[in-house]
Image (cartoon, rainbow, N blue to C red):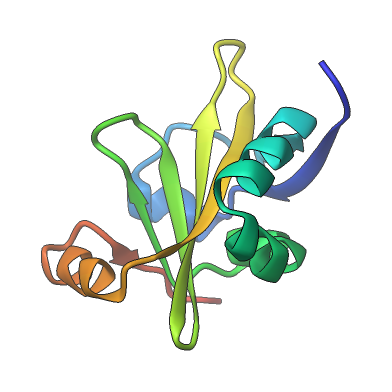
Length: 123
């Protein structure tokens, strides 16, 4: 299956905000297949933002649960970009960072306005 490494963990603020039923500091991993997906599907975004992926997970500006696929989305602003990291749980209950890419700014504003993206208050 390739190399897997820990890239972050769920903070108490994200767990509370999204009403998740998981322990604080539940690890978030990234595997070779996830990295390959990001490199292949979002090469420019990967090049620019992969080095700060752990920071996006540790200190997001916004989070939400994607209703379509149940993934947990971490969004951080790096002006002018809004960068998303999607985290999904595998069949064995392990959380993986699945993808990373820059979002459309208008879409982010719409999601904030609709209350889909929730602001994370940093402690």
